Image (cartoon, rainbow, N blue to C red; front, side):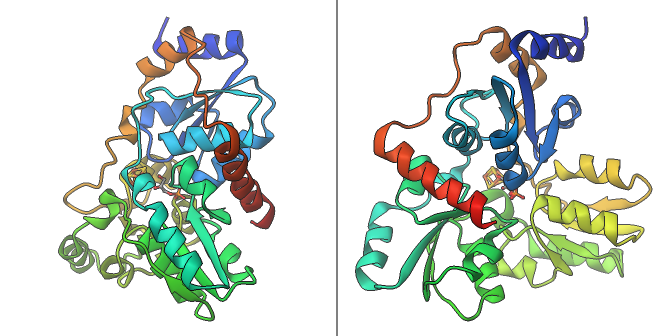
Length: 301
Ligand code: 13P
Ligand code: SF4
């Protein structure tokens, strides 16, 4: 029996569904029932009827799925797959903004721990942040933890005053602008598509800025022969599936999220065979308040 066949059998035995982010390894994307960006996957976690969700992503994704669908068992193929940005804000930053501004909304990117979500008023993903922030009644927005997504949303929603926090995704933040400029000179006319977690040196060069799904949709809807892609290299797999005839160029120092790559077929088999090690999620008030911010996102988006 191949690993793929074993997983297919275990899914039936355990009434399990596999969700995978576009940054997961290609062979994991291939066995997933649903592949998508953070927003799509959180909606799926809510809608699906299966008893068990295997989340091939990072811990904030599994934790969010558990907060949205508390009755389900949520399994992470490797519980140590974490997102460094998800921890990059302190409670003092939130308390200071709330003390200084009466009319402030605390908006947290889904790439955050449940505790950070519990301090916030609403959660967003890169796919819905502009829409949600634009429709908030508040004048001031403390956007946590990501400074780069915050700057992108601030440009799109100039009528609000933004308060920034110093968090960032190391994979996108350290992408080298000279490498992207070199690709632009080598592939003249190729659209530059960037994730809003990139810093403004990179997004300033982009023809399109959007979530991983947004980048894939752009390629489907705007037929060019070549594209320069400024995000984690895992999206190449979905891009190749969507338009195999096109070429996709990434920064020479390949942007790889090592935490996303902890999701392997062997780990998926192990967690499905060994049920009972599902993530518990937070308790009490943290769970209540964090799930409120996530559910508010699902309503407003
Ligand atoms: P999206 O899934 O919203 O495109 O965000 C990318 C990401 O960093 C997930 O960790
Ligand atoms: Fe976190 Fe960046 Fe990895 Fe996404 S790509 S999980 S933001 S470290």
